[in-house]
Length: 151
Image (cartoon, rainbow, N blue to C red):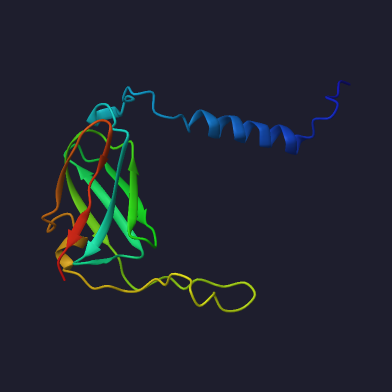
């Protein structure tokens, strides 16, 4: 009977997961990667989502490509989002946000100066791919696209 010394099944499994994760987390080499039916993929699109001069504190931004692919990102509390590996070409942009999520707080209430998620209403047309008038032409590389919605 053979035995691998110092390698428990849990360690071997963890090592396999880490290797698989590292393989899928490569950085940009300056050359767009192959992207399937929509062609090569762009690197990164970043921006801030605002309604007038107020930034959204939560929600999602989705880019719906002409080839049928959808890439999505969460809007974080400062209003920013980051889309990775979107295929180049025209896309319709959809923004969804509703009531702030209920966040459990360990050890009591959050600090008084902690940022707060708030609901900010905006036109319903932005939340549906059939009615949004937001469009973006995705190009390879790193780009900024700030999204300004109307109430």
